[in-house]
Image (cartoon, rainbow, N blue to C red; front, side, top):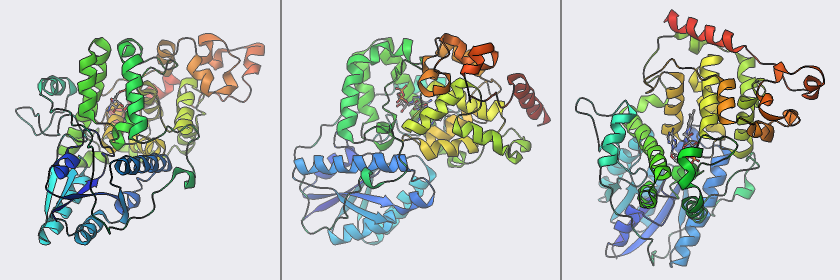
Length: 458
Ligand code: FAD
């Protein structure tokens, strides 16, 4: 019997899944396989929130396959060894998987190809599974990747997308392939209490609700911190429970300024992936060096702790950092503000902040996280690397009546309106009312002066 293995990685879905479609179009049976990758855990990338979301995804994928007569095979260990082992047990002819952008994913793919070929099996790697446009599919004339978003987006927008593939009706799995028990989020410690539910079904439900009632207002409302008017689809894109190709098709079909603004954000995701694919080292090193050694030598332990715990004395920063801990997710504007505050006002190395985000974010993603951190820190692709976001002015603009802050910082719940953004200005009983809320860890003017000094030192 002809057998294909489909290795699921960051594409935990049945709809619009080119590797699965290709395997099912073949003449025989299919082994849907997920390997709990020891390499990911060893790299410190297995954060509790993502493991919990992943457990939901695997259960849902298994349930979806069972409805179609199949099941998911789960193994743990080194991906290459486990895929080869399963391919051997099933006497498989070929393996299908999705391409991915990171250096780790590419090395894994190369090792797997070599190991499979040595055993007389073929590896098929499919593009546009984890991105709408593949890294390297559009390039400028003079380089292997775009370093600036706007020209990238122009080319990205002009590129035709492949059609969306339907979920399969039936999946036939050969008998006798053993599987581990599926993980369960209930067994995992340290999960954020407000963590979203994972899995393709939950993702498709959220997508349908978003297209129905969120997308149209996105252009006007996406920066409203209290309004929570973004899609919250990021964990589903990270784990691939939703397909970026399908997302772009469906948003474009809906049309209008909301859809245009939303598609642009999805393109940002592809943009960072093509940067990482071309410069894998940017996951850990400055993409554009600032030659400011002082930054990486600065320890600033107390400032960092205050930032992590949401007690910097800047309410919008603290609200955002507490939202991150509670939900494992944070609004994009809040990510920009908290990252700018750490990297430019406290002048702490961006890697310190990126690491903390990756410990908590359910959508924590090497390309999106590291390269957005670099963008904010001025070591990445921002064409204005020295801009500093003022948390008070930004809070006034994006949380004008203070609702976002009061939601996450209960010490300030009694302070009305926008006054909540500057508690240090309160006097008399109003000031007494804010109780234990701390004073700012640093004055904004002092932070700015520090930043300018450091950058001019070179
Ligand atoms: P929406 O506003 O609804 O946008 C739709 C989708 O577009 C998102 O789900 C996301 O996949 C993509 N997107 C939007 N903005 C960006 C962006 N700037 N860069 C890349 N993709 C984007 N996003 C992650 O998915 N994982 C991360 O680890 C991550 N870390 C970040 C760290 C910092 C410092 C910053 C400034 C941004 C980071 N982002 C990250 C990007 C962005 O903040 C989130 O994708 C977004 O907030 C997710 O919410 P949403 O799904 O409601 O987004």
